[in-house]
View 1 (tube, rainbow, N blue to C red):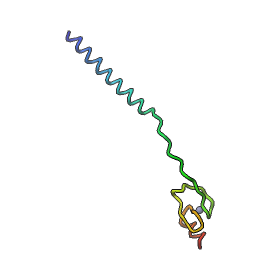
View 2 (view 1 turned 180 degrees about the vertical axis):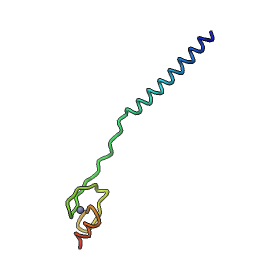
View 3 (view 1 turned 180 degrees about the horizontal axis):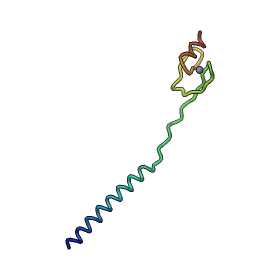
Length: 74
Ligand SMILES: [Zn+2]
């Protein structure tokens, strides 16, 4: 009878360990959503395309860097 109780405990422990591993594997296999697309703009001075978040605003449009804004507006 003692042996049967030990067997039940071992089977329960293995079952819990396996179900935990399966849950881990399922969460790892979920595809991560790609980052949202960013609006791209082109520099008014050199024409290079870059994300609008990195743009430097000038009087005549958007620039890729402060130097190009200064070149265009001087
Ligand atoms: Zn530029």
